[in-house]
Length: 60
Image (tube, rainbow, N blue to C red):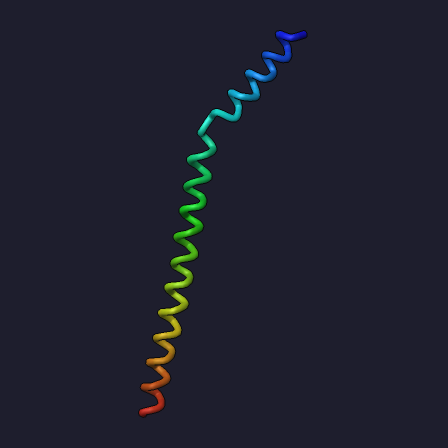
């Protein structure tokens, strides 16, 4: 009985010590951060371009 509990605990610890999924999660978070930065930059750039075009249209 004790050996079976020991085997189960050893399996459980070994399962959570693996770092295979950790790298994938880090890449996912990095990709999400890059996507958010791109969206913010494109939104700001789009507003700046819209303002410039409005100024040009107004002067015409």
